[in-house]
Image 1: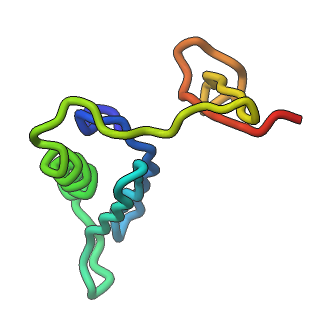
Image 2 (image 1 turned 180 degrees about the vertical axis):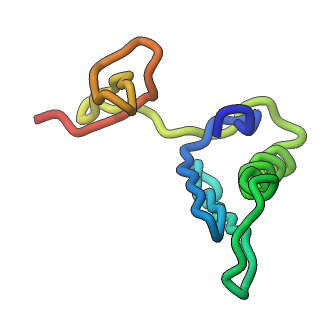
Length: 103
């Protein structure tokens, strides 16, 4: 999602294949899934790869056009927050934020 982050906090997962592009994400108010591709199994030109990301970004930005902060989940005493490098799985100050239940 680098370069296509909405102006409010969301959780999102994107993916592409030779045939389609997909983004699924949410915040406490909305869940949005955007798929782009062709219904006849045509391969996508690389210029199509970011269309779903752009639509996702534009949609969340439109939903919160008048706001600078959207609702987000709050940590509680049962959750731990860590920043983890999504590639290595190691803790990293520059990583993505993950929450998990305390043991």
